[in-house]
Length: 168
Picture 1 (cartoon, helix red, strand yellow):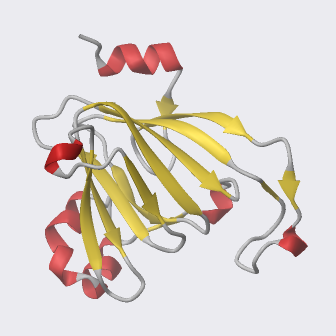
Picture 2: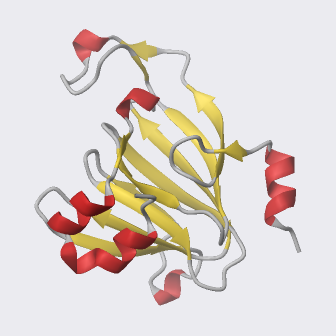
């Protein structure tokens, strides 16, 4: 049975510098969109799209953050992942990414721009290999980290999960 360490080595994953987990960018469109053609929330040019492999282990989590672009998560293999999404209107939801679609798991999840998101492998899981696709393409300038106290103040009904998915 494959291990997280084997996946990290085979796919050449490295620690994500902001979010947690392990990743590697697998695609960056060679074509770009100029800043003047993009909504005002963007600064500078953006590739049409980007894609990454993303691995979570029990020791890691995807820290609460939001992006300026829509992000599509793809579940590839491993154990189910619990994702928290917090919406600008004050609502939120918990989704499970995984392969057991008969029990309600989703192999693909959309995170619209501006929605706070964080994720972790479900309890007793060993790892989860995911992928994400972002359009317009991802740039670190579009990444905003969530602060625990601010998120709990706005989404108190998700206090425990926000605490688990934030570093501070």
